[in-house]
Image 1: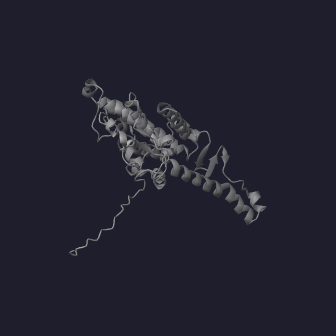
Image 2: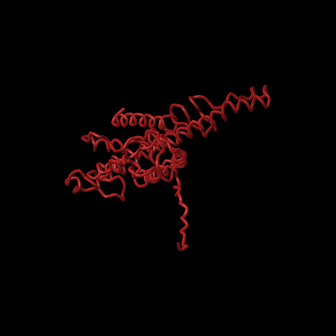
Image 3: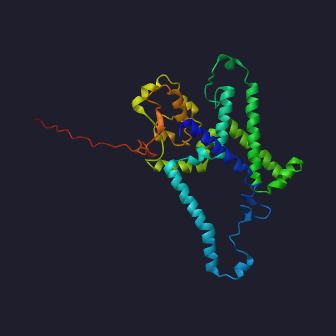
Length: 317
């Protein structure tokens, strides 16, 4: 699979997962109903088959085994499977599924086209002088409105995991939303808008506990999947204006060591960018997936080897 095909596949997968994230409550795939205090999973109330009649006809062992088999063991297997994925492939969930990272990439692209940069602290870069001279007020209005729209969808989606979705949507259409749901929608939309416009990268790097946990397990594995830079051909980068680092949604030094790429999401955007820059180079891209060999500086805390000092013989011969 080429990198362009990989990016198309990733776009399809994360778009479908984003839709699943928004529609799962309405389809009763998964949600917690605050009005009944029940989990709904695939249109069924999650009761583990434990009814009042079953409890009266069963003893403690039967109840314990039912909870173990229907609840505790599935959670343990899910956690173990997740740890294996994180250890071997790192933040694969972030790069391929995470709804927040999907928004990060979309807003990055929108800001890059409109303002020539994806963060406020970067220098703007434009393809032509005409784009550089035009007024940015309208562009920022578009960015804020798009971010606010996505933020509202996020807020509504999260609220639908807690309240019955169809009545909630109906009340929203009829402008009859109750006070507390309305407060949640306003506050959540405001917070998400600020995040999407100003701090989306910072949240992924430092604010997402699930993302940091994935990175920690990934750092434990010295042979984990890693975007590797061909240092023997570093001279080929002299004519490149860091397209790989510009393409990275997390703004990482992609040509550096693994420790510097702690929050890499394995999205391969840097590989695709380098492949495009080096398309006329017969030796190909300088960035590629590692082949499983042990990578340098793969530990979170570098260890320095201290050589013992040689004793000098001061005796006069």
